[in-house]
Length: 237
Image (tube, rainbow, N blue to C red):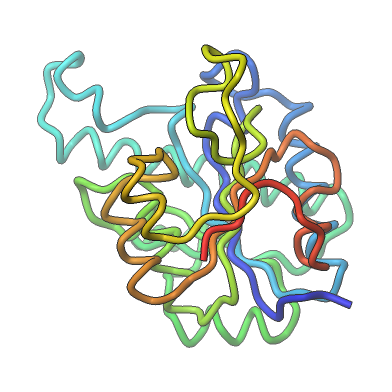
């Protein structure tokens, strides 16, 4: 039995790129699609917010000599590329009912994001992919991940990390003695300056009492296990 009724999963673009950190890895895409299906198969309703950092990052605007708004527009298009890839893989794995909704209208590829329509798709058992962030510049996809989870009345947000199995008191790749937390409160994260997600997104989660599960998406079955209450990664509530 699932612990939750409805979840939003935040997938980064880096998770699709794999170890290269940029571009696409077909094995990673296959793994991510199977993880999404496994979570939904526990009986929970699943929406997925897809990042785009493997295609383009808005904070690279200065490197390219363009303004930040244009750079963020490119980044939002990158999320759509990833979402279409994920939708195609989900279909190839036998999922017939996958809905891609975007905050910016791209009518030939996706439905426009309309909250009540997204809720209806979830209630019918569709996997809902959400692209283009929230359609606005100057935000990472952390913020729309929390925003969509709150809008869609999700019971929790699963923050999928690539190669990191939770929240630590230091960078475990640099500090061998770094300690992983099983559970944190919102205030502990703020007081200790722990890097969970961008601050605006985290404050939004705190203000709406949205539980966060930070976990390693590389661990097979992790997302599905979280939906049934297994203590995986770090829980923030």
